[in-house]
Length: 277
Ligand SMILES: [Zn+2]
Image 1 (cartoon, protein in one colour):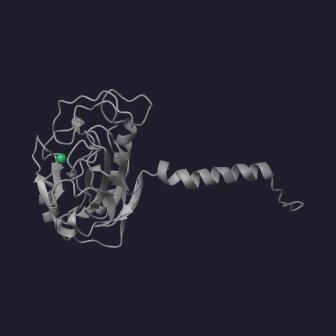
Image 2 (cartoon, helix red, strand yellow):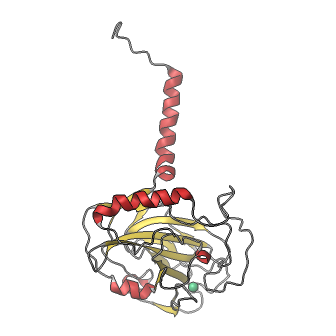
C-alpha cells in the first residue's frame, strides 16, 4: 500500500454504475431460471372465489377435445365482462402476454405443492381470453390474488374464462405439440377439489421459469376451444423474432431441467411435472 492513495477513475466508475444498474434492472428478469416461492396451501376456483360462487361451467374438460373449462357469470350475456379472475393458488407468473389468435391475453401461473403422498409436485394453471392481465412474469401471487379480468378476446367469443390445469410444464402456449389428454392435463375442477387444503411451510422452493417449448411455428392449435382446423401462419404479437428450431426443445432447456431436478431432489420432487421428452 505504498502511497496509500486510492484513485477513483470517473469513467470506470460510471461504467461500473451503468453495469450495476443494468444487472439490477434486467438481471432478475433475464437471468433468473428459477424464482423462489413457498408451496401452495391449497387451490381455489379462479372465479367467484373461493368456490366459483356466482359462476357456472359453460363447458367442461374433455380429453382430446376441450382441454380446459369455460367459466361464465350467472348474470347472462356479457355481464361478466371485466369480472375478476384470481390465481387458483400461490405460485409464480410464468407467462403474461397477449398471444393473439384464438387466445388473446393469457396468464400462466406455476404452482409447487405437496401432494397427497407428501412429495412436491409442480402444476401450471392457465387463464385465457382475459380482458386485462394483471401481473408480469416473475410475480409471486397468492391464492385468490387478482391476476386479470374476464374478457372475450376482442369479441371473438362470448365473454368467459378459459381455464386449464397442466401437468406438463413445457406446454406454455404450444398445446399443438403435446398429447391432448390426461397425460398432460388435469380436469381443473377435479384437481381443485382434490387439493383445496394442502400442507405448506415457510420454506421456499426454486420454481423453474423457462421450460416452454418455443412458440411461433406450431399454430394448428391456435384456438382454445379444441377446434384445430384454423391455421394461423404468423401472429403479429409473437416473440422472439429470432429463428426458431424446426421442432423440439432447446438444448439449454434440457440442461436447465436436469439441474433443477438435481436441486429439487432433496425435496423429493415427483414428476407430476414431466421432464422434457
Ligand atoms: Zn375454452
